[in-house]
Length: 373
Image (cartoon, rainbow, N blue to C red; front, top):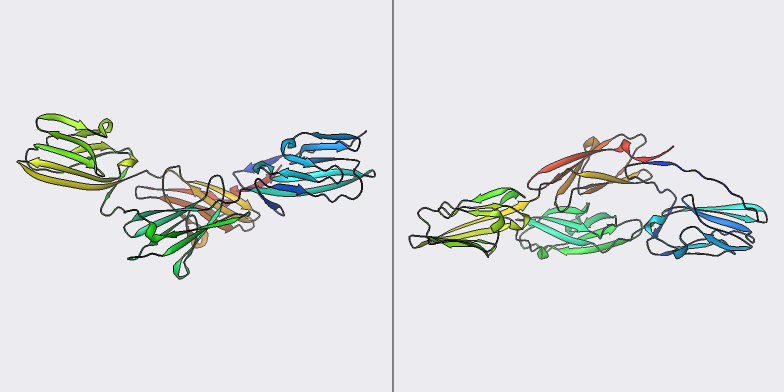
């Protein structure tokens, strides 16, 4: 039986990561979704395409011929309905063409397949009374984070900084939301068990640091500990005995100086005890070893004129993100939502900062969008 054949050419040039989805349906990943064409009359022949690629075709005299999706799709040849168990790659345009009594009928629907957000996880980092709360969901889910708390507190972004009052047991709530779902979690400040880093020194990962106890007199015996764990011990009559850090540390047994090539796990309390002329002397220093921030990377997600900019640095670096832009715009958090005006060429700046360093990146709105060729 003769069948109408046609060739459809589509060429899209994508700049960065922005994708529009106007008048589309949002559907959760992993659900069954039926495209109901509502075709009237008996179908003589038909086909379904996804983003221009043939999925299935059939006619009244023969069984359907599948080109893709066969292992997770079902076709009703009587009414043309196509049911698909959705994956993320199914986002886009489903288009069908049917012949009924010699007349062609067409159907088209655009869908966006979205991972539902998982229950957020809230973590904290404390420095004295300053606390940074960070909210996250499982990768690769994308979400908009909002916070609420006591006295009408609200904030947009995955991280928030607060100053804890004495004996403060306040509860803060983080909500993670996308077009498909929303999930929330609470965090009690009293559960922030980080002891902070009061009167400590900050150092970069991968640098040499020497602890100088400045002990007067000849050391008869001594030891060093890190967070209570024995590092090295020695006496005047024997060589040092190392328990940890030997491959990246040096000890001066004359003055007790300990030099360490610092890793992240070296954060904490270095404590030493020395005996000089039968008298014990002590030394203690608290350090915090920090990864320098890398240059931030800014990406975007666009829905018509609504744009979400997201700023990130390389794992496992922790950073506080701040934004600046036109007309005095400012924001705290790794993501920000803006509404783009017509022919808007504004530039937004993201800064990533920790106690060790700060790095910035710019993002031009004119570089975003879809351009058809």
